[in-house]
Length: 364
Image 1 (cartoon, rainbow, N blue to C red):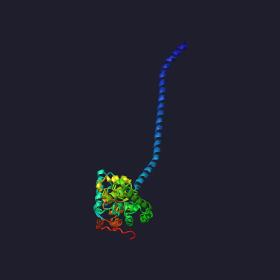
Image 2: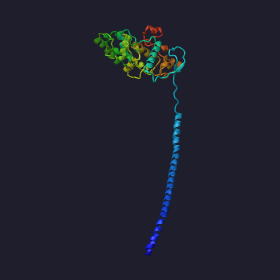
Image 3: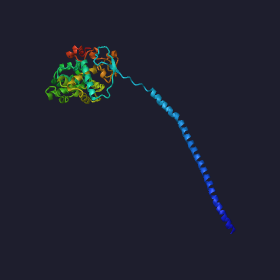
Image 4: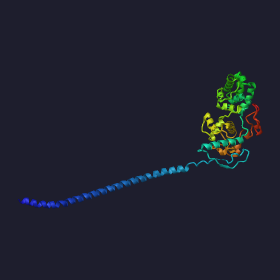
């Protein structure tokens, strides 16, 4: 019974002491949690410091790369200076060098501006070459079509020096159609590719006799059926023998219209269509003469005489050739350079303008 009392007495005391013990245990846990949190924060700080240190180590490499880029930019070549051209397009070749101005290539040129510039170039060239004409000697359509076929892969001058002997021996399509090919080859030898050309001129002569009664037809669709005759040859004949407008797209014409950015086409038929759309049809034949004459005399393929060019302010390609006026004048050909032209029998207008006839074959 005493033990029971004692246990009853002890039990209340133990109960009173329990909250204090719990509080002590909670305090210990809180302290431990704080220590753990502090440790975690220290760990995070150490990790951040480590990341910053690593970034600092990498920074010099980035700086070096940036420095290399900066140096490369500094070493980049300076932009090319824009070429300048004579201020007055109407200045003539014999005059003193005119004032100069910057030429702005018409990269974003409108259609209207292109038409105006193209037509102005043609007007300027008409003043420079008022005597422009076909540079093949001929007396009739038959002689012109034969001479034009022979002009492939050679100069008009060489053709003009060769055809007098050919037409003296074979004056008509009937005569040339019945000719001995070997004899014709011997006459045409100076023009180059004489065997192929002999076959063409004899073949077209036979076609004229058999299909057109010995007469050269005046229609494009008929001309292109003749052996050796394409659109270029047909338009030469139509424009100069029949007075029917046509554009002659030869190598000079192709080169210049691309330099002037009239078109970017390279196919002759597409060039013909593109350039023809810039001009009225009545201008086509004379336009062809103006462009071809300019290509032969001033705007050469390898080294254009830019410094002596009367249309330099209108040309986006100014500066591709010699720009010094005195050096450029030395590049001029035919009458512009004081030399004979390509025709042995040029029109009187050419002679009146100071042009000199070409010498016959074998005259030196």
